[in-house]
Image (cartoon, rainbow, N blue to C red; front, side, top):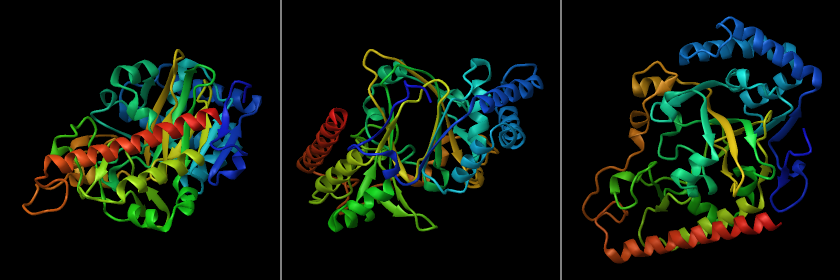
Length: 374
């Protein structure tokens, strides 16, 4: 880890305070062995990273199985912890930064956690997505600068379980942040916790219009329990509204949730040679503002199993149709007399919801500024 790497806890304190987070720094020898191995395996594909996503996936799985345990045993053990869901977030530094093998390195590390996949509508159907700060600015940075989970409108069995980032270029001081939901839940008031576990929120689909009722999901819970009893969160931040127009607890609950997340999170810099992987079901993340700086990283989605995606879409993968995968999360046609916001609402109730969302957004923004100054 270089002096340029940023590792900070929201609210101050040591990173040991954040349960489920582990770091690993490759030794010089491990880095050299890993770099040599990546180049040797890429020889089998004429020295280039394969263009076909199926061949990419197969090559990465082979390299993960054959190379990691030999070149960097400690890294291999950390990846096993992520694969077995014993940690929520891992941060690895001093990785090889050769651009010619970067894509293979990302897919290799991701494949050590699970099955790498993507949705056909994202990044032209590539497994490794290139994300730059200039793209964020062009699309409007608000979504990436808010705390959020990805795929909130997609059913749980088809959503990314892990998100993996491999840094390519990153201006000093620019960070990505992650907050596991388990310690956050433990500090919430009983009233807020009860609301978050109830089906009281609706989530907007990506790029959907807030005024289009078909863009909103059926009533859902922000917090839930996994089949194994772990606390999980679905929160697209600003793309959420109350399921009932006159919900008196909506604003206070989300403001309290945002405040605790701002207090209990980890910030790291995803520099060249740095790998950050975090559980998308058990925490929220955000990307800090770049200002006049620049950010470039590669990104993958990972699931332990692709079986449900294959069944829902009728495709073998690893690229799947997003619209079909998310179909079961869509809000059903509104019924007359319903209290939910999918029903025929008055202009007054719509204004009330908008005002509540504005209050939540203001609280989140203030929390970000407070965290930055802390």
